[in-house]
Every structure is written in C-alpha cells, then in structure tokens.
Image (tube, rainbow, N blue to C red; front, side):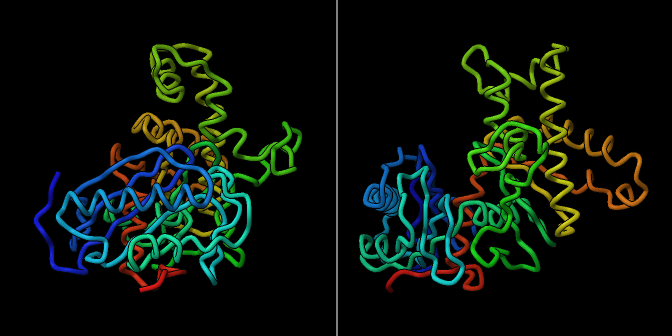
Length: 322
C-alpha cells in the first residue's frame, strides 16, 4: 500500500518489537493505519536497532517519505523501561541481557535524528487499544501471551510504577502450592492464565494455534477441552478481578495471542467472572464482567499505541536526538 505524500511531520511510525517479529505501522495525522510491515526480529541490541530501522525505512519508502519527514518513531518493547530515563533493561526475549540500554538515541541516530520514543510494549498496547476501540475512561490491557501482564491507562496517563513494573500481575500467586515459576515464586497467575499454559495443557491439531483449537474443541463438546478451557478462563477471570479491585478500571481489554480466539474467549471469561462473583453482593455490584472487551482480530494495537506516544508528550518517557 502506498499513501499520498503527507505534510512533513504529521505522520508517525509505531513498532511492536517482539521476540520473533518486529511489526511496524505507518499512522497518518488522523491515527489511521496507512501501511504495515512485519520482519523477523534480530537478537541483541545491534540487531534490534537494525531490524527496527529497516521497518521504518521501508514503510517510509512505500509512502514516498524519508524518516526525517516523520513526527517521530515509537517503539514498544518487552522488558523494563525506566520511567525516568526510558532506558531498556533485561529484555531477554530480544537477547538484551544488560541494564540501561539507550535504545532510543541509538535508533534515532540510525534514522538520521528523527525523534524516537521507547515504551513498554503493554503500555503501548493500552494506548493503542483505547484509540482503536474508541474507549474513554480508565483502561487495562490484559495481554494473554507467553506470560500475563497488563498495561494501565489511568486518568489519561500511563501508570508505569516507580520502577516500570506496574501491571506485572502475572507474578501474583494464584495457587501458592502450585508449580515453581521462573520468577522464584510458586503458582504464579501466568502459569495458569497464559497462552503458554494452554500450550502445555492442550495439543493442537491441524496446525492451528493451541488456543484456537482448544476453544473449538470445547465448543464441539470435548469434555477434556471444556475442563481445560474453564480452568484457563477461571484464571483469566481472577486476573480481571484483580485489575478491577486494585485500579477500578472501566475497561479491561483482553489482548495477546490468545485474544485471536475472539468472542468465545470473551464469553468464557465473562461466564467464569459471573460464577466467581455470584456469592458476593459487593462484587456483583461492580459489574466486572460487563467491563470486558477483546481486541479485534488484525488490529495492531501495540504499534498503533507506540506511534501515538510520539504525538502525546505526556505518554512519552524518552526521546532520541532531534
């Protein structure tokens, strides 16, 4: 797709830098996605910078732009992003094992000085989900992927926490007698409510993702699939309940790889929430299940949010050289 050449400084590029892919989108001045590109991730700091720059340059070339014509570039990355400096630490899925990596100025220099903002990927996704779904009010984006964590948009601002760890609810113990978690605790929520948990419990057939296959088998009446689906939905419901009881968010948007299941995921989690809250007038009064939404298929909320963070200084934590 080739866009009409925009006025200089009105469009932006957003990147979702993951362990297997870098997904980039080109956003116009109305926050409409005009083009997108996906390339494999290259590991290590130099590899991440090279892959990110490649995506930006190719998206710009397709629109008849140079990177310098952009308002800026936003990059959503896994790992801890320091709220004060924007430095990235311990993004192990990217092959970055050291602390305080100045990714923004490195990428900015590679792109000829265009402003660059680095943000935690889930925070970026929270911003993108609010924009894509037209949601107002406090929001939590609950990512159900390899792990479980949430991006929080409260009072129109991202809530990062003192050390960038706000929303890391996947490491709240769900069953203290459960299996060991890599974080050093036992029975953490992400061992039960993640895509990885489904992968471990269900063997997919016909090459489909395990979550898609599981929910289809449960809908067809497979008793084992129903049991696994309901246990998974119970754990996700506990995560949703935790977010509402701690932050009283108006919206909880389910995202991540498992969200590709779509409406059946939403219905299963809502049903378990209603079951969990049935005995408590207090919890029933909060209408937790009614706060749920699911990210629409093929809506790239993380790179969208990263691109938007360039335009909202209150959301940005770090800019590269300009």
